[in-house]
Length: 424
Image (cartoon, rainbow, N blue to C red; front, side, top):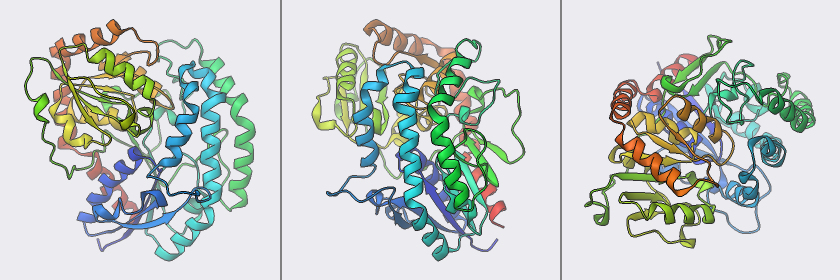
């Protein structure tokens, strides 16, 4: 097939962007032109990987220069006290304001997106984002939706409500949570739905903030995927992982090379790790164990010190590190969760916001890890979970087999093939 122009439009966060980078690398290797639409704060990061960039903003420019993803770092930091509350209380205090910020961004960027699509005339548009962008839906090109959060985002009344972190086997609380979501979100949805139609896009389904695309992809391993009472239609395809190639060769720091304990990776993601008090408590507890830790310190890396059995930096090449470790302590973000399966690593999941609760619950209830209360865990809960998972050889064997299967059939290649088919 002759070269096509594929435009990626990921959310301004590292997880969705990295998913798209992995797919984009496959398409570029097949001779296609790949262009990324990115926030101005990310300028140059995709060019450094060999892609074209088109810049945009989701809000008015700041008075001072901002770092990549700074808007969301600030937003998370200011909202952090809400993370200590039950998920049903987060609906009105965090989930709804987050949606509102996303929808405001969609409104703001609409004219710029139309300019970009008019210039590039893409053969296909790939959106890895959670709100609708009418410019994508109305462009003269087919479009692809990637769901890179937990697949409960694709609603099914027979499954727990998204963002709840509730178990599949216990329906108590589902109706109450769903009613509270309706109460806190309906007015906002009605306003956004009206605006979407004013821009020429179709009406949104009830309480949905994004349309179904010509091709729909979601990222989740078969081992923990949900058994849906209402099967998805043929436009939906599961990518069991979507791991980008790492340009980094990671060499284990000398201070961690020797020692009898296991090697463990601690990462609460680029946003949750901004909670310095939480990171300090984890360092204090884990510093008393016999294990060795690689720590992704996050944006507040200069605000706390690591223990003697640890090494870390603000940013780390996660895909290069995961093959080396024995266990991962994670916030339960979808990107890290699927990468752990891709590399066969059990997890201790400590969720903070959005779909992290759903991933943590799913990993726990399927036996591939342990979910812990992030802010109220007792030290022995964390150390006990680590010891149990490290000692569970059948679990490690199962995850190793999963890793072999996923690596033999990379989701990035599967997605690239489906996108090529749509573009043709």
